[in-house]
Structures are given as C-alpha cells and as structure tokens.
Length: 219
Image 1 (tube, rainbow, N blue to C red):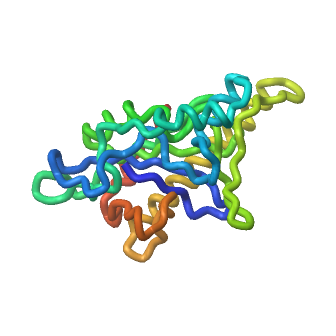
Image 2 (image 1 turned 180 degrees about the vertical axis):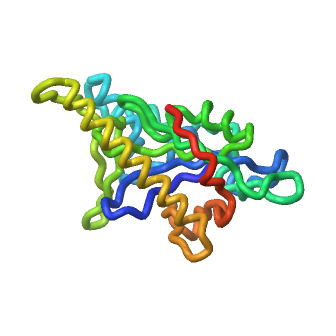
Image 3 (image 1 turned 90 degrees about the vertical axis):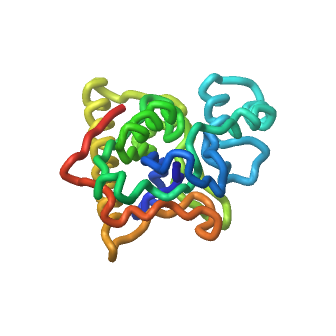
C-alpha cells in the first residue's frame, strides 16, 4: 500500500495504491493503516471526523479523537513495500482504477483492493472531486491543511442533470488518475506525491511496471 496524491493543478486527488509484493518479504514500515495518517493538527482523524459529521453525531471532533485507535487498525498489507519484480513476475501489471461510492473514500474498500492486488493487479483507489467523498483533501494554505467534508447534495433542477454532471466529473477524475500513473511509469515522468514526507514515505518504483493496454475501472 502506498498513500499519495496526484500532482494535478487542483492540489487534491488523494490516491491509495495497492500492488503485488513479494510474499513474506521485508516490511520496514510495518503494515499499512486502514485509514491514511492524519494530515491535520487536530486530535482526531479527518476521515473519522467526516463519518461523525455524516452521521450527525454531536461533538464530532471529540468523538473522532476518542475513536482514533480505530483509524490505526492495520491492514494485511505492507506500507511502501517495493512492487514485485523478477523472474517470478510479469514485466508489467494490469491496472484497475477504483471509484468509491457516496460518502466513500480511498480507504473504505481496502479489503477488496488488497484482494485484487494479490491476484496480480495494480489498483489505484482515487478520491473523487465531485463532492461525494466523506472528506477530500484539496491543498494547504498558511501551513493549514484544507479539507472538504461531505455535506449532502442540493439538487437544483432535474436530478438526472445533476447526476450526469457528477458522473462527468468522475470520468475526468479517472482520466487525471490514468495520466498521472502514465507519467509516473515513464523514466522522465512526474512521480506521485506521497501524503507523508518524502523522506519518510517512499512509494514503489512504477517505471515500466503498469500495462496501460490492460486497464479496468471498478467501484
């Protein structure tokens, strides 16, 4: 597992990568957390805070802080481990771009994405920019991390027009994701930006490792 964000102009679009690794290989950073590490200075976790807001729980920040151990639960997947390579692996891995649902996020479907990765896929779970994530990162200002939290949708006009526009935004997000991964797979391309400090979080070397002739979308 590697948590990153795409180097797009909006400064957002978090993405969680799942990919094949060597069974029983070293995991110098241990296993990945279920929810990505908190980017904000508060006591709680942004995703848990978003869940509390979504459920309309009183004092969502306080409860998110109390439930922070939930966010620290570990997955059955190593964090920032190198992608599988060598004689027992193909030159390139097929790609699955995973699209979350309403009030979802990059971590909510981790078990399904890990299962796909264990079967030989690179899986990229993207955070959509259509207002549907539980919480979405969209940059920073004066050393303050900025998030948008899901607050429901007010449909102005026919709902199908609203949903159609939302769907187009999601397709655009997937196009941005695909091109960012295509760039990261080139020797002269731009790498994904780790959510944590680059000195701490070093993602897998994707150069030449993704088969862009074999791309699927799931969600």
